Length: 99
Image (tube, rainbow, N blue to C red; front, side, top):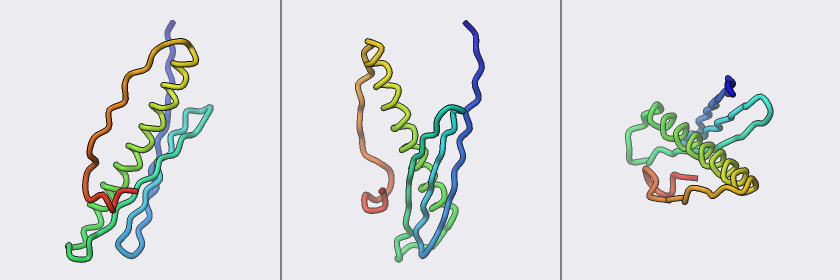
């Protein structure tokens, strides 16, 4: 069996008062999954907007990937297959900035 699919991911960033929020949306053509991430600039640090954009976007895409993996695991379990064990580890950046 051969098939070709195209899934589209879009990331929207908003920044206000030193806090950047990101929303990553995966459109599969039949469903949409949304991930969220944020970053904030420490008041003692130099404000570099590109860094906030990168952190917030990467966190949103990681959240999106986690949701997609959970969905795949649910579908594998429903089909009678086992799932890959989930490993969690430390995130990047300051814990209070991750939401």
